[in-house]
Image (cartoon, rainbow, N blue to C red):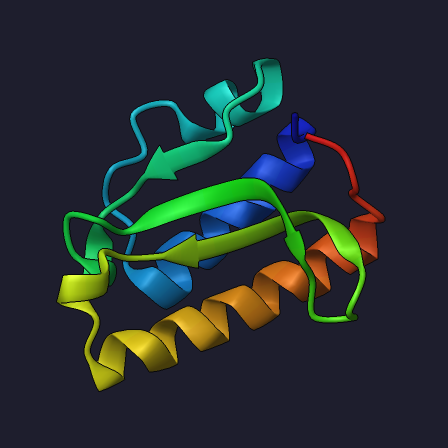
Length: 102
């Protein structure tokens, strides 16, 4: 679960980088319950999602990773660039907060 501050900053990244449009309570949902994925759509299409999942992280460790993705069949070069930028910013934010729990 994210803190309200973390959820707000994650949402800011999703709106700034991915043109997220489907907030419908993202900050509340992420900060009050275990919410491992959230469909936000935006520039990543209908399958644009934010995840909190166990994965290999950019530093090579295994643990919780905040990241975005889209449906494989909807992936374009432009969307790949968006995903890389968003995931880089999400990782920096996650490191800043020392967040390693769902």
